[in-house]
Image (cartoon, rainbow, N blue to C red; front, side, top):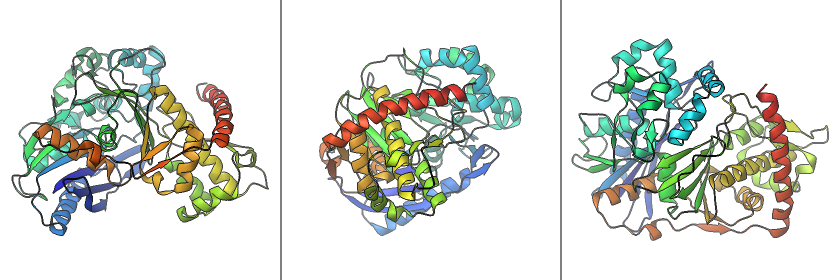
Length: 475
């Protein structure tokens, strides 16, 4: 069997697949996030323990030889480790907002745009550049004690394999220090962020993916394992999104719009990033927004509605939600794609005493759909569109998304990131797997022409309201 490991922000998963890509079993375990005053951190020991636990349960449940394992996980943030990959302090999550004042300064003085023009990465508070600069100012002892500032999957890889040196891959390194042309670190960017004296902390870049052998924790000793790519490009691989122009929409806690490309256009509004892949010259234009199912979760919690009721509620109120509109930017750190505005907040309009929970739910889903369309258009979608993530469990929402986006959706279910990690590992180890079979969609949702025309007008209205909101937030 083939094993994919996906170290998510809130859940760690391991999935087993057979040679045709059929998912045999999944084991998962939640991990905690510590949230306090804009700080969002994770216990690395807990995260690594969860990885070992799910792997041990999976290999016991499916007692077949493990041909190879692929590793993926959450991106961004800062995971400070010693020479053995053990934690120096708690990991700082990509959701963290502590560095927003530094980012505000870089937005104002032009540093933000200069970095984007050099690397194609639009920094946000939870990306490594701002976080390392913040730690250098306010927690320098942690940086002094660390051997490397890695990413989540890199810490896990070093611990699982006992690798002597910290290593990442070109996908995780893409934000914000990697020059996408040379696929090496841009030392000028390091200098611009005031981190020259911390340059030693940047891990070496495994290009192509670094590989190793498990040393017996969770996986049988000697199991071949590869490190990466991180979760966004891993999902693109797992959904079969590799041809230029094709795209993927991940409908999870946050939205992530990805479009495969062989071009590198660093003009236009600085936003999102270009993710380098294991194939030189092939990239993903990524718009990883902060908006996503977390916005819907907040509305459901506030109105006392359960997830099981969503499909019925969407069917009970018409497109347009009887005049209710939602700008779904609920994240405390604002928005990061397809624009960067740390102070942007959600807005509800058209609400009256006659507004029902169904209206609020539909308006929120429509707002998220408009945000997804904005991201996909900014990323340059021209081909087929796949969709994956927790949001795909709602058939009514998938239909609404197809209508708002005005295009068919190739729905890919199961552990898509883990699947992509296996495909990446197979490529790295020279193991022949039929990617077309492995990435077959489970369904295709066609848009309704009438509703799509309605939502096309609604999208333009959404952009107008957003422009006004961004103007307020920027003052």
